[in-house]
Length: 509
Image 1 (cartoon, rainbow, N blue to C red):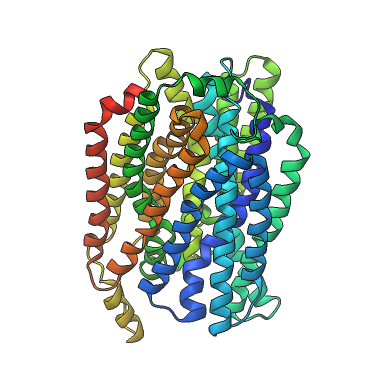
Image 2 (cartoon, rainbow, N blue to C red; image 1 turned 180 degrees about the horizontal axis):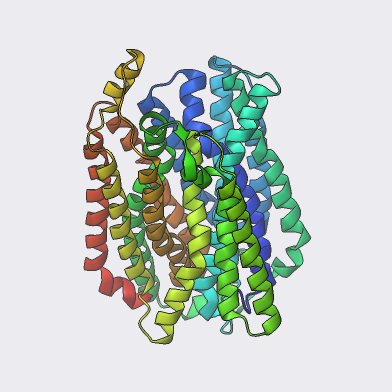
C-alpha cells in the first residue's frame, strides 16, 4: 500500500490533512451555530450551509483555470492565505446582530474562495506525480492514501470542535453562542501548520507546481499534442457524464452536516451508557485504527523485525481498549456533532482493507473499472439511507417532536447505533466513489485541461452540496421515512444511469 510511493505524496497529503482538520472542525458545529446564534429556522440554516458548501466546491473550477495559466503551487499558497483571513473573521465573537451576520457571510466567502484556489490544485499536483510510466500504475492507490490523510484530519475535528467550545464556555466563561467561535479559531492554527509542512517539503514536489501554460515542454505536454480533437472531446464528455452522477451522491452524503446532524440532535438520546460510550471516545477509535494497520503490516511484513513491531503495536492498542473497557463509568453526554467522527474513522480504518481487496482482484484481472466502482458506490449510498428509514419507524415528524419537547411530553428516541451504522455504509460508498472519481479525473482529463477538469469534479460536488438544502426543506413536516426515501431513490436512479453509460465511460478509462 505504502511501498514505493514518492515522498512528495506524503508531503502534499499532510499539508492537506492540516487544512481539512480546521475545515471539518468548523463544519462539525456550523449548522448548529447558525440556528443557535442567529435564531435561524432549520431550512434557512440549511440554505446558508448548502450555499457555503456549494461555493467551497464550485470555486475550484475558477482556481483550476487560474492554475492552468499561472501555476498550481502559486494558487495553493494564495489559497491558504485567503482561507486564513476568512477563519480569522469567523473566529471573532460579534454577537447575533446584523454586523455579526454580515461578518459571518464575508468570512464564508473568503473561506470558500481560498479553498477554491487550494483544494483542487493540490490534488492536480498529486496526480501529476504519477504521469511517469514507472509510477502511473500507483495512481489509484496514491489517491486512496491521499483521501485517507484527509480523513485523519476529519476524524479528530468533531471532538475538537465540541471540547474546545465546552472549554470556552465552562472555563473561560463565554456564553454558549460565543463559545462556538473558539471552535472556528482551530482552523487558523491548522492552516499555519499546513503552510509550514508545504514549504518544508516543497523540494520534493516543486517539479509539479507549474501550470500547463508556464511549464516547459515535458512528457505531459507531448501527450497533450498527441490527443486528437475527437479523443479530447470523448474524454471531456465522459468526465461530464460522471460529474452529472456524483451530484446526487454528494447531495445525499453531505446530509451528515445537516439532516443527519439534526436527527442526532433531535431524535437520538443525548446520553450514552455502558459499552456504547466507548464509541464516542476518539482515543478508542484511534486504537482500533492502530490495530487494523498493525495487523495489515504483520501479514505484509517481509522481515521478522517488522512482524515483531506490528505485533507490539497491535497488543499495545488492544491493551488500551481493554483498560478503557474495564474502567467504563456512568453515562456520558453525547453531542450531535460527535457522530460526524465515524465517517472519517471508517475511511481511515477501511482504506487499507479496500486497497487489499482491489489489489487481489487486480492481480487476477478482475478489478472493476473506476466508473463501475462509482456506480456501485451509488447503490451502497442508497442502502445507507434504507437504514435511516428503519431507524425512523415510529418516530414523530421534526415539528411534532419539537412541539412535544416544548409541552414537556415524553418523546421516543432512536438508538445512536442506527446513525453509526448509516455512516459505516455511507463510507463504503464513499470509498468506491470519491478517491476513485478523483483518480479517474486525473487519469482521463486532457493534459491541457487538468486544472479545469479537476475543477469540474468540484463543480459537480458544489451542485450536490447546494442541493443538500433540499434535506432542510423536507425536514419540518414530512415523516422521516419519506425524507430518507428521497435520497434512496436519487442514488439508485444515478446508479442506473451510470450502468447505461458504462461502455462509453470504460472506453476512455
